[in-house]
Amino acid sequence: MLSSKAKERFHADPAAAIEHELKAFVLGSPLNRMPTTRELLIFDEPLVRFADGNDPLYKEYKTLIDPAHLTPFEALTKSLEGGPAMVPSQLSVVSWVLPITEETRITNRVETKAPSRRWSHTRYYGEEFSNEVRRFVVQVLTELGALAVAPMLQPYFRTSSNERVGLFSNWSERHTAYAAGHGTFSLSDGFITERGIAHRCGSVVTDLPLPASRRTYADHYSNCLFYVDGSCRACIERCPAGAISEQGHDKLKCMGYLRNIGYLPMPDAYDDEKSVAGCGLCQTKVPCEYGIPVKINKKTAE
Ligand code: B12
Ligand code: SF4
Ligand code: SF4
Image (cartoon, rainbow, N blue to C red; front, side, top):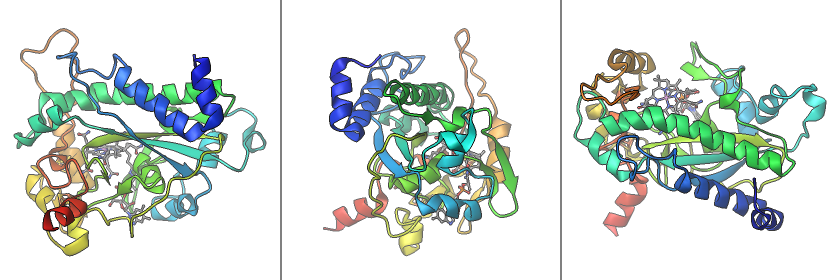
């Protein structure tokens, strides 16, 4: 339930109010806590930006990814009874990035074969919490009388594969993050934001008018050192599966490795401890781990 103060904030400046609510929810939620050490957060304060639901990029994604990749209009329409007539043509997308904490990143840096327990917990409990964030944003927008949907929570959400891009889903969170100007893709396939590549991200489509955030990057690879000046390649060395090369990321090799690790065996696991291993070694102990390396290098040279 939104307080009357929160409603006032929404009335005055909806974009700033959503950012405020989202940050407060992430930092205050008891679900954003490591199961082993409740004092530790799973995610730091989120980055919040907005994409224009009619951004031509979404049409481009149909060619770049697959015709099945949904536009915001399709994502909202498919979730409502009543079809297209119910959905206004002007839509916005709230996009957020949940940076993985330093405490977790440090533990993953020393690993060389499988992720640390905290990384694995971020994969399992962190994704459960990400879904809570999705539900929270939908609830806030609905309370304000707006239409809202988190495509990843819909029964229509699915992953698939094609010859062009291999594995893909019909709603790529990172492609919306790109549209909202959060950052760019990279050699390892991860998405590099102001808070680096070690994060999870999410989004909600709404008909609440929100000002689209500016994209300031020259192209979709500008934050990765390899694409900027041919240097770095640290992720190639980090990957235990040999899934990253100068040609990019081999999704099948990566997925095969993730499946192989499967659930981390934890001999001292407490009752009910869940661990989807994940991996993410290519997202720690690399120059893009917690910032934009291109900017960091520039600053060091000054
Ligand atoms: C399927 C999937 C996988 C597959 C395939 C990944 C992939 N790259 O598509 C596998 C199993 C391999 C995988 C592995 C991992 N995943 Co995963 N996965 C997904 C999922 C469910 C869908 C991804 C998708 O739709 N991809 C679409 C395709 C098309 O993307 P793509 O091929 O990478 O895109 C390329 C092209 O578009 C290209 N491109 C070419 N021309 C152009 C032009 C323009 C204009 C643009 C914009 C782009 C572009 O650039 C991109 C990069 O090369 C998402 C959740 C979601 N719904 O988004 C999570 C997600 C991508 N995974 C995530 C994570 C964290 C992981 C792991 C680290 C596992 C873990 N948790 O420990 C590893 C990392 C692997 C890696 N090196 O990136 C995060 C990524 C966050 C981040 N930091 O980038 C996501 C977003 C989940 C989340 N909710 O946060 N994953
Ligand atoms: S480790 Fe280097 S080459 Fe790999 S994604 Fe990060 S910046 Fe790019
Ligand atoms: S997630 Fe692991 S296996 Fe996949 S590319 Fe990164 S380091 Fe390699």
